Image 1: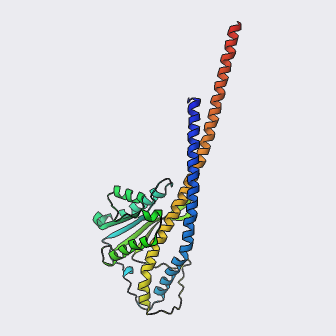
Image 2 (image 1 turned 90 degrees about the vertical axis):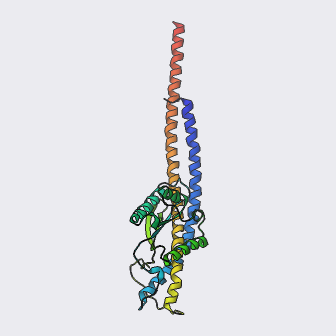
Image 3 (image 1 turned 120 degrees about the vertical axis):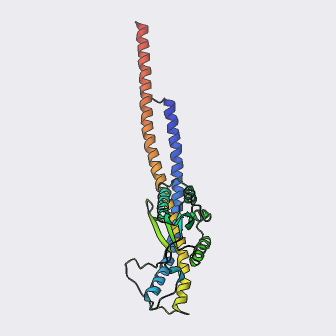
Length: 291
């Protein structure tokens, strides 16, 4: 049985850890609010552009020549996978890493030389490198501080390789934040572009007046939609990360409080037993002197 000194030291250690996890929870909650604000201000713009693109294509009576929508046999594939740079966020990283490896596994028959990976986040880059897949670049800063211009540079590289047929398909893997306590894994086709319909499943056609013509407008709109798609996914993943870390630190703080209660009870019982034993020794010694 541990001594009173050891139990006291354990209580102090757990209390110190509880203060750390509580502080980390507050920091993550503040970052989560900022991330949610960024998504809230960004999504309407992205959704409107995607709706416009879907409307153009749905209402077109002629076949639009859109290079980024060209579907062809997949001989070379790129996987863009988003994680965090740090841990202490529950199963956030392990889940998205498993999903990324699952997606990569679907194209193993192409050979590793025909699978390019773009790891956004240190945890993803390290995990894929251990499996023999080195990231095509370092994009860790996009997770710490999402930047649209840097995201555009990455998307432009993917677009150039897709148009030049250096890659035939791009898959995007990331965590979508359902709420602060849960995330949904997503593996989406990034390229070639496949415009989605509206949430209610109906196509809303609008009589747009276009200059100079529909084909040129769509050709200018598609790359912008693609860039927004990746940037929005990064914002979504960052918010999911902070939500996961907030939840994980709250659970850790609650567990620390429960453990402190158990240790305090154990300490009090051990202290009471020690006092009782001392009293028994004193009473026994006193009786021995009087006899």
